[in-house]
Image 1 (cartoon, one colour):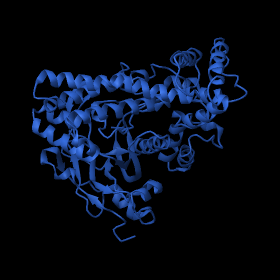
Image 2 (spheres, helix red, strand yellow):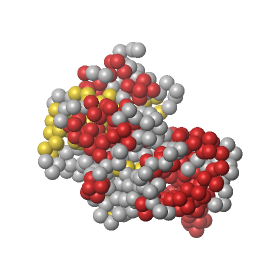
Image 3 (cartoon, helix red, strand yellow):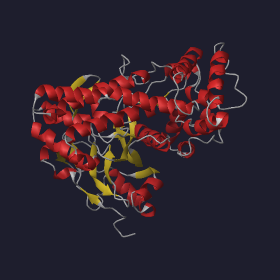
Image 4 (cartoon, helix red, strand yellow):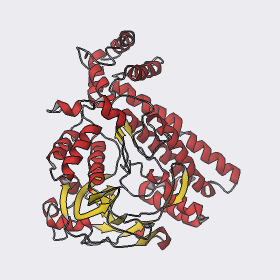
Length: 485
């Protein structure tokens, strides 16, 4: 490996007009120290893990030193936050550049918490250690669950405090993403009436993420359809593992189809379709079961920005945009039903399956069952003596399920094979994540590292059964998550 540590940074986004971003350098920190470092991801990026896992990495991943080829920028974007539109931009993040990986992929390398930018709006541009560790843990869990996501390369403690409700240790996260183009990026230019900038952004997005669609009869419409499809599959994947994003603002919907921003997210313990964890989601806008509807709302906002590009005739443009967004519902239903069929071990598709799935979820909610463990329990020869298996309505449902499974090709054996691959044993249980984060903030990262080890093989039962245990009812009732800003 060369002294450059394998950096192959390009800056294609920074070649767009200056209205798309602001050039800004990270603000140096007092005493950077690596807290977590993702060697697996580092190697996949073509970087020298041995060189970067130490002081050199601490300097680069804190922003104290720029890697070769870096041209740091803060992106301009807007967004609807809880339904209210505002101009935003990277207020505490910079993109160093785009690393070209050994397999030819282009990914953003971004620092989060790296100091103020022209978009900071009087904020300090910094981040606290706990939330940055949280993003690292949950994004890595999502990756190993097979769900498209941004990833975390490193967390560096800064040796400086940040002021929130109290003094907290500061940190910088290094995020890796296919890009940071959001619905809100398109909204930024649409709201300013800059149709040509919307076109430039759409052309760039096509080139970067959908190059095959550039030859389509209407590339912009084809791109909208592709984004809708990807988001439908993504939200279905979230819900199949009980994930609640918590802040589905339009600036947190990626055109690349990745999960982005892990601020107030959480995972279901007890199955509740209306579960809300975010401390600021007072009306349940982003509740678990609301997520598909919110995705449609966000995609409608994207379609609005693209409307001038879709057709010269305004009404035809509206009709094309509406048809594209309306494709979300059948796409989501296909992805969700397919995933739920695998979770229940159902081979093929039959008319009675939808009712079987619906009644199972209603049984989980009525019995107060743990979402993750209920599916794992159903796989066992000897059923557990806990909800939903102890509920009086379970035997009748179970008889229907057994008859359905017995009548399919491969029978129960095929069902168990599907179920083992679709139902994780380990998810980032909210209580375990909070315990590990608290220990890491105090200086002991061992619980966090043990948790990360288990999350890398989520479909294998862990050596520590506590990682599969639901939190106590009191914890679940009072648990709240925060954005960390």
